[in-house]
Every structure is written in structure tokens, then in C-alpha cells.
Length: 449
Image 1 (cartoon, one colour):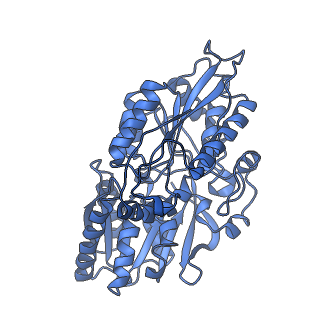
Image 2 (cartoon, rainbow, N blue to C red):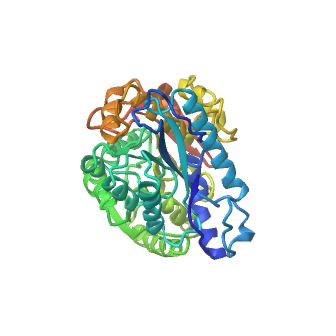
Image 3 (cartoon, helix red, strand yellow):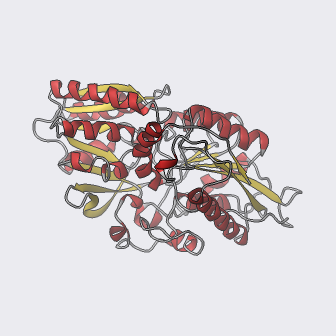
């Protein structure tokens, strides 16, 4: 079933939002699955079924000529294709035993790109999943904000966060243990090693001065990363740091405010002699707003990028702005398809290839959604209850056995009772301005502590 709402957006608002989200969508707007619900004899629930929630970023890919009209109550073809993919995946999950022997019923939420307020839509999504449908777990792959993280945890519904607008922090994971999971992600408190990787791969010139663009979303995560994680490491290298805080956009219209704020950031960075720019996670808003304006002012600092914020947008909107870009990637979906195909076979992706919708940007079966289905199935195997406590115990028990369909080193991951961000390996990439794509510097995989 599909739950959602109507909304209106102006042509300029959605066009601005599309710049931010179309590239970032490659990280999470991938095919998925759902299926018919039939009772299973060994299911702990008398109904024989269990509901799971899945969000999708609806109407991002619709014709821009339609912007400004009321969003149709029915799904547009692009959105319907995503939901159909979800259904195919859940059908495959049910064939594989479902969740704890229960057949799975999918509930889908259209997190509209035309939303007037992503915080409000996050709250609506949470209410639809937890109060109306009472789902067991949620795949939050759209543009959910911190509001969704708090809401699902307080409702005691495990959330698998895939989107990059607000990647859960270590503080979230500690506060909401058992309710926050990122199977193919890395929490921001583990970003400290990025500085050395950037240094070793030539991001910082001899006279380096770093500027950090800090998204302020009220959670303090951006400030923590800039002040407590990156700045101490940069000071060890005797590299001066300038930070610039800005408020992130909560809809397409307020992206204009981000654009204006980062125009001021360029002036401040140029005045301070900043020649290297880093971004805290912001759903690609930072690169999308900063890079084109910097180019217009003939300002070409070196850019440090990571999976959480920017590979796709740099390869599109920011391509003409970057002369030197070094990236830390923990999802091989950051690579061009030709590079993905050179990597060792991934068993999880191969397993999902049978039901995944073909794409021109990733190898068959590779998607965070594939990880969502697999981890639910594997962590809940043998569980006597379909509840958050059983899931927490099961995820911790997976250890290094869980294989992600999108992480490096054949899908290597690591889970413990206190660690729920699974990615452990990364690859350093360099931006090729001519090809407008990211490519491995040496093809070696490194470990992120």
C-alpha cells in the first residue's frame, strides 16, 4: 500500500531542489521490493505477516514543465516504477523466508520532492508508518531529516537510514541504540581518518588553509564534525582552519537561502586565503550551492568530498568548478559503472540482481535497499519475537558475516552490540575534470577505523 500526501511547488523551487537531489538520489533512489502477504506457519505473530515501511523520493524525475501544478493523487510513471521495484524485492524476500518466518507486507511513503517542509514531511512519514500502519522497521531512503530519526526512535521502530540529507550521528546511535542502523554507512565521529587520507593523496598544498562549510540543522552534528573531529586533526598538521555555518534548506524554496549564504562563504574564504574546502554532510547542498558560485568568481580551491555529501553533484552541477578534488568513498556506487564492473564479485548484489530493476549507473543488484532486505532477513532468522530487541541482538550477532551489496572489499561490514554503521572499507578517488567522473587513485582499499 502507498501512503502520502498532496503538495504544491513552484517551478523555481523544484528546479533548485532538483539540482541538489538528482545526483544525490543515485545513492538511495534505487529499485527495491514488496509482495503479497501470506501467513507463515512458523511466524511468531498470529497473523503470519509483518509490515515494513519504505520511503521514496517521489516526483524528482518528473517533467519540470509540470512544476507548479497540483501533484496528482496517483503516482507518476517514474514513481510507480520505484514502487513496483520495491514489490519485486519484497516478493524475493518472502521467497527467502520473509522476516522471522513471517511473510512481509510493504507500506510505501511518497516523500515528495515538492514538499513545503522536509521536517514536516518527515513527521508525517513517521506518523503514517508508526501510528497508522504500525510497521516493524523503516527504510528511510528519501530526504528524511533529524526529525525522522528522533520520531522513529521514540516510537521504538527501527530505522535504516540510507539518504544523505541527515546521516545519523554517533550521538544518535548511542542515544537510540537498537533503533538506528546504517548497514553501508559510516557515522561522522569516524571521519577523523579522512584528514590523513586527504593529506596522503595530495589534497593539501604546502601552504594549505582549510575552510569547512558547516550545515546547521539544529542537531549539532555539523559543528561536532568540524570542531571536534576534523579541526584537531588539521591542527596537528599545522593547517589553519576557517569555518562557515549555514542553515540547510528544508524545501526547494529555501535552497535560495543556502545559495545566498554560501555566496558569502566564498567571500570569507577568499579573504582568509582558504585554498581547500571541506563539507559536512548536507544532502549535497554545500557542493551544489558553493561550487558553481566559486567558479563564477574564478575561485578554484581544492575540494575534499566523501560519500555522505557530494560525489554525484560534483560530477554534474559542480563539474566545471573543480580542478582538484579528492574523495573518500565507502560505497562503490560512487564509481562510474565501468569502474564498478572491475571490482570483485559481490554475493549480495548477485543475489538481488534477479529482482532489481536495471540501471545505467550501478551493477545489477547493487543497492542499499538490497542491504535492507538482507539484514532484516538474516538478523531475524530464528527470532521468537518480531521486535526491536530481537533485531538488535540479531544485528550484533552478524559481526563480519553480513555482506553489503554496495560496500568495498566484497561487501565487508562489521557490527557489534554498540556499532550499527556497517561500512569498514573505503577507496580514495580523484576527480577527472575532463571525464567529469570520479576514478580510483590506486585501486587500493583502506580500512576506516
